[in-house]
Every structure is written in C-alpha cells, then in structure tokens.
Image (cartoon, rainbow, N blue to C red; front, side):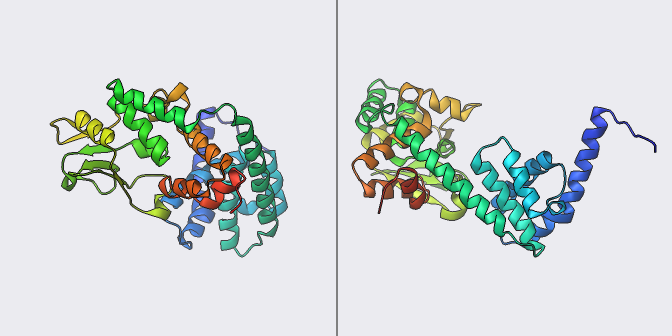
Length: 294
C-alpha cells in the first residue's frame, strides 16, 4: 500500500474541501428544509464548522451514543456544547433519526450549568456595587463633563443593554436613519433610542425607547453638536472601550448582575420584568439564574 504524505498547507486545503462537501451533503440540506431565520442559519453554520473541526467527520457518521461521547470529551463551555447539540439534532431530525438521548443529555447539561451559575451569582453578591453606587458614579461623570462616558453608563444601568447595543449613530434628523442600525435622535421632549442590531432582534424585532432624562438630552446635544450624524463610539475594540469607562472597569455583564442581584435580594419581580423587556431576554432565564420564584 502506498502511503501518501502531505505538507501542512495541503492538509488544510484538503480538509476545507472535505468540509465544503460535507456541508452540501448534510448541513445545507437540513438547513434548506428548516424554517430558521438568516441570522440563526449563520450561527448554526459557525457552530457546525466548529463541531466539524472537533470531530473531523460528518454528524451522520456517528451514532447518537457516539456523538454524546464526543461531546463529553470537549473542553468547552456547556452552553457551547448545547448549541452544538441543536445543530446535531437538526441534521438528525432531517434524516429521520432519533434525538431522544441527545435531548436527555442536553437537559442534564443545561440544568447543571444553571445550578453552577446560581452558585457563581451568590459568590458575586458581596463583590458587586449597589445600584446607588453605580448611579452616583454615573452622575459624577456628567458633572465632570464626560458626556460620552455618562451616556454609556446611564444606558447600561437603566436599560441593561449589551455592549453591541451601544454601537449606534447619533442623528440630527431621523429621516437619515438606516433601518438596520441602532441610532438615537432628539425630539423637543425626549430622546428616541432605536435598536435594530442586537443579540435577540430575531425574536423581539425593532426596539424603541423614549429617554426623558434631561442629562441624557444635554449629553446627546453636546456630543452631536452641529453635525448631522456621528458614531457614538468609534473604537476598534468596543467591549474594552466600554469596560474601561464603567465603575471599577466592571463592564456590561457585571452591571446587569449588580442590578439583578439587588432586585433578587429585595424580591423585586417587577425589576426582573423591566430588565427582561429592556435588555431584552427571557424572564424565565433571568429568574432561574437568580433563583427568584414567581
């Protein structure tokens, strides 16, 4: 038997060729038969590619038990494994194969993840600042004339957004808005904060928030000046830029945890509902993470 030897670059090229062929054979066919949104299809595509790189073969070449064994061997986050299971189940369902064991495994995986998350949140309780502390810090930024930093902190604290939601335009005229972007414009009485590009937009669509706060209106005016349009944040690394402007560099994730932790301690279910709507995310997930009963 002749043993073929390839250099590293050739191996990479061959692997990519095989990957494309595999997509055509199992992934794309399953996707074409599904009702997933374009955004979900893109996410599933990235997940399938990562899964392929880990197992080195098609999904359909493994039995259900073999797939679970492979998944258990991965040194990756539980929710990433859960995403991979969703892709696997899509492909197997399209080929009339059972997903019963995969469903059981994912349920156990997710349950363990949230149990650990509750413990983690409890540990954080004494480390996180109060809402009052974050509010005082935010107001000081305004007093110091740091209008951009003030607006970042005000939005994170009051609307519990993710970092990507702050990637937006300031407009002097709403007619100039790109309907796929996030943007803010002013009326005579309030600011209008429009979100089109955010994590859960497939489910919640366009979000429109009216901001009546006078300090926010003043900050918007100072930053926009006489221009027709500006980028609110112009940075190569959005996450780092925002984190460096938050209290003690806590970042967006710790801000929302601070708010939710305080709501949880006070049994403030209405607070959880507010965060669920403004972030937006599932109320059930928030209440499960912070051990709140309806």
